[in-house]
Image (cartoon, rainbow, N blue to C red; front, side, top):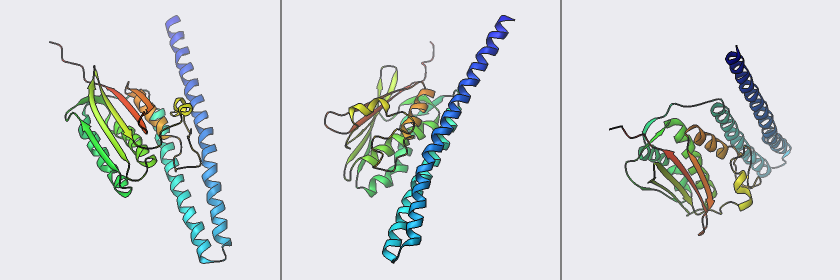
Length: 243
């Protein structure tokens, strides 16, 4: 009976950990949702109390911005909850260059709007082990962050290359970078470097970190000496067939 008892104890501990994580996530989500809802209420009241069209228009514009942030927060919360519940993913061979080309094509309108240069560099055919939907989500978050925090006419470069037995993807931007003290906390849920700036909700990098973990990938995040941020993802490659 000892092996059975040990297995039951292991399952109970795993269940307790899962319940605790869900409880923590629910509490954090509820706290984060209160702020945009309170902001929406304030702007709604301001619009109702406005005495002229200009003031009313200004309040309504602020309401739209708050609604956009709430929508982004809810989508990120749902994504975080979905990937948190996954204990593992089935990895298959993927053409990484093709996947990244699709990701960049989706985000290109954001770069065009800010007159930014968005490029993909490196080897043309690199294969990795991964899950396409999750990898697209991870790189979308990383590139979207670079686009959002890089000023107009800046540059965002994505480079892929072999590095030993893995494939390295570097995402470099010419933005302001991250304060050194904040780098260790960048992947914490709901952590924002500048809460008063931007429309981020503090979940993008937590999602990136979890997807990397599910793929057995490593993340390297550092400020570039010449300015800007560089995020590197090191992904496993398919095993070589035995001879």
